[in-house]
Length: 68
Image 1 (cartoon, one colour):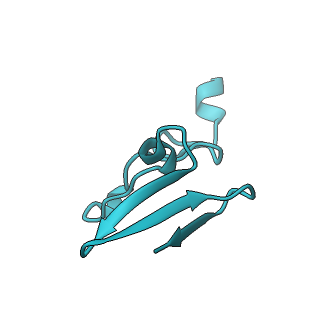
Image 2: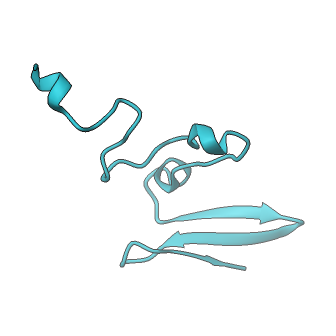
């Protein structure tokens, strides 16, 4: 058996330290974006919803907080 065959990771699985850029096939009708892609390196993005601006920011602890 080759080293490729012994690997328990299938091509569709992602290592735990990588964030997928798009939703999984099971959620194909739901948009999903990596925060790092939206924020382009900053710790905050602004999102508009029904005329209001919301802030989505990453904390020092690596959590996300959304405020109005």
